[in-house]
Length: 375
Image (tube, rainbow, N blue to C red; front, side, top):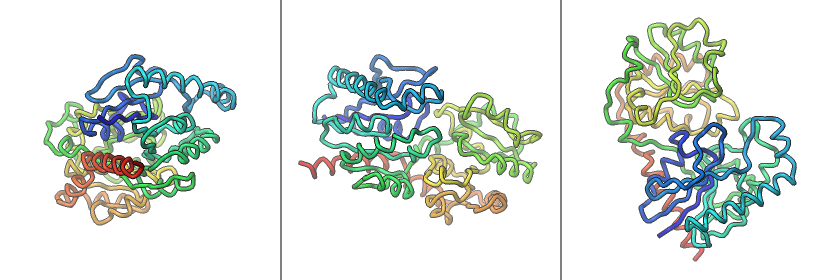
């Protein structure tokens, strides 16, 4: 029986993200402990919560804090030292009680705030999953880079979701980096579902976006609405902050734009399958440059044409399969072209190649190979 402890930056129940998709596909002979952060207003797992061969528990620890006063307090070295000590004791007791203590375990990290603490923990293999450019997010403290460097000295291998992220973590000492992109639950998105009730009254063809609103280019979305008034533009996903959509000046007086909010993952394919095409109207900047979005493969698994801004090497490398625009004007043109090409088997091939089953299998194989090399 193999044991894995994963220090995560996101709640297990918040969204179905890369970590949930991969960890749920680990073989049955793996026991997994998922350490999630404390988030105000969200469900906490103060007591261990079992989900198959995975156990989730909440441990309050360092993290990005929106309140300026708390951020300044956390910036004090002594504060971090004390919290690190408390976090270490909390984790050691938890791992011992749940049977995850000792050296005979794998340790994975995607929350850099745990970096220095976890670097001191024993494990047969330490690894880092660079699923995002974790140091580039707004509000990230300047000292967090040192936590990544500390862990990189210990990590036996790392996984990078894109070439841009691979290059960025190399600067912090990452070694044995494997490119391991995002993926899709192919069966989930390709199996036909009934059109959802929220879209029953939409009579126009739908130009849809499903994902977080963080990277949306609002001006581009508004232009799409104006150029294609005979289509309905539908946005699906969690708001950046309460009232985000209503407060967007760019979205005023657009009669063919709808924001449906967050949709449960179980019924998300029904919405995507209702699209005429899938949009990725991202802002092109340094923050989006490393992204490799799940939605690219989800749209493709549903058989939908994909139109994207050319914001990363991942997108640029798929110009022969998806429709890519370098400017707003080109994006608008690509939408018109995509609407004329509704059938293309290469989309399904792209999605199958990037299935979560394949991604999880590659991660497991890499971890086992790393363990064998050390023994």
